Length: 548
Image (tube, rainbow, N blue to C red; front, side, top):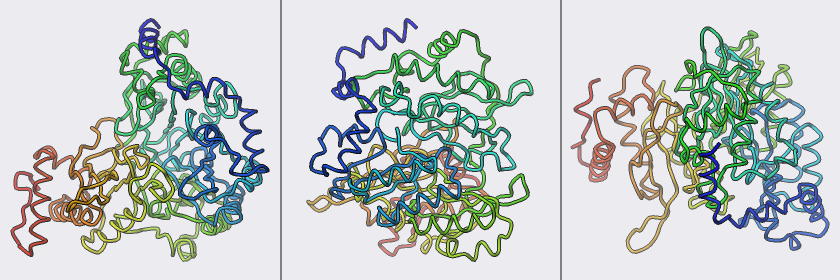
């Protein structure tokens, strides 16, 4: 552990002021204060509690909606029973103006809840086995699974029991509540398809095979803009909890606590090297571990909308929810539809909804739910992500969700395309909650100087991936106004439509494109075509160096 001790010592000269708050933190006392505020009122809440303590329990003060709170509901692996879905819907309807956000961590966010209603709202969630505990600040966040875990034909290892074992280590455990150096994201995928952004996590178990046995390869240190690295370690399902505890304990003990922008697990691993960190895990375990096997998770992630056949002879039906903007009424309808089939509800990382256990597809698709949220939407809507944005988040530079939806609607009209997979991921600020670095096209909110004034815009990134074998997205177009951004993207989509190969997704097209062109060259062609389109000229450029 010498290297970890040295790295920690070098970064421990000055601790961030948040660490003093955490040192004095008592989960019991903090919870009692939270509940007590429902009687004393909003004005009595201290700034410290608003900024940190309440967030430990998934309760967020939002300046854009004064005296109203957001509750982040932990939905383990995105799996909702009918009873749970109805309870969440009821809370949204009674206390949250019927508004729901579906998130990129397979969770639900309820908004507009008053401080007076918080105890009853939280109690209603707890009564059906749901909680908001540890969904904010320096905690283990919601564990991601394949939304079709245990159900899909390509799911080789069901991971729900592993999730429960790992979650049982930290959830509502005082030893782990708000004691980490920084937040810690976990993902487990036992499927051939990567439907849960498995390589974007701090701690990731990805389906693998070694010497004829199925298990997991361990990947560590993923975060916004950086894919997790292989720890060169293969483990069996029954070893998952033990390995998790070893990694989590190392992070808790040696992780950095000075600069909160550089306190994630990735920075500790960068400081000592993955090989050294692997040795530290083995030392903690007290036994050697085999080297990695062959990772089996597919880069593209399989079906992301439409109908998917399941192992038990039923189907899963996707409902596209643009940017995750949903409602309690819609969730109640989804629960009723699922209940009529003895099915359940699963949430995806792309903010969509899945109903499982469906036998009568025609009748189900005629329900109000699927009339509002299509089962087979435009490719621009099917895999659309957008974070909360400036309306609901104090860090948001742009509205985000409305911008994402407006662009997708525009592209559906301007560049209609069939049998295509297009991933448009929007973050309203550089913090990256919309995981823009993983999108085919990623958008980050920014301010753009225009005619002596400042207007809202985006930096556009190109070439993100969900695969551990690929690079992160690269800056493509900088400082494009929100008004012009859809038109720039349309020019790229025209080139994709006109020069793609049969069945080629946008991700595959961009990879092929980048093997022949630099990002700057692609940007120049798009800029040229944008200019020509606005000058009503027909002197458009294409990709002459790239074979069809």
